[in-house]
Image (cartoon, rainbow, N blue to C red; front, side):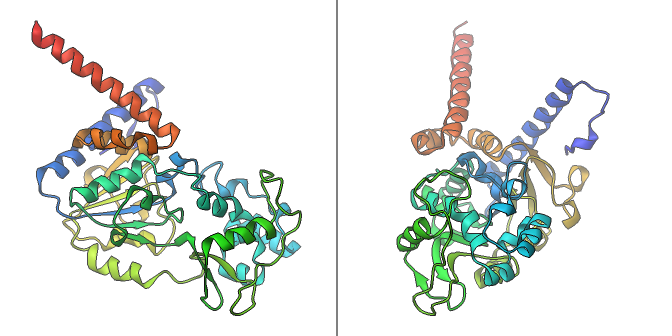
Length: 354
């Protein structure tokens, strides 16, 4: 199937764009055909930040994401820690860093923690696609690397979702495991943690520790998995039980650079059709083979691609029913597709009267 490097560089940009769109349409038709054929009984999905960018949540590795825009000089840290973050922004969410100094994690995460509490972001078309799969009895497991909790806004069965890297809305002490009420923690974040982004005039100028009521250490945080920390046992259990028997694996909006979550593509069976929905091809170093290798690549923004699949599946009425619950940008996408569908229907009706 399609890979960008197969395009002739001498061709005009418009021709290459047309080829790209045609390749995606063909791949979408193949996925829709497989889902409609009845041969697909079990779908396993792995999602990353790309399924939530339509909600306005920046991802980590893309331009404009957290890693690209991080300013260590503004973070409450030692000079050595700032240098480490400048060299590798991932240190903000490293376990060793958090036990040394909690402020980098809390200061960078502050707007995401408080935004989650206020339901600032809405589930995207990509999230609703997972719900529709579940409604039709096709979804076996959704492995999400995201910590935003948007999957649950759609009413997705919680038993079907594995939060590989934890959740912002669950608060625990990283030291003793003591659970903390989410709203109480958010109040402490508002009053104790400074605002790096200058959006909250009521935020303190300097950060102060948030202490665990049980062990009195400043290790309280959302129950997200830090780099260097252990993934939940449930991830490995479901990886072993659900992946090998899947008929279809959909990988969406992820760079496939973070292990062990990326190993999911290697744990499916030989019979499993593997589909990647992403802006660029990923996972070739993990054994994904596009083109003659049999794996499918659907290039583009996740919401646009899944909207095409939703339309092919005849699920547009379901999506239209929740239009007001979508982010504004997604509403616009849906409206454009609905308008085109109406015009086609009118054209077909006129042709039938001739």
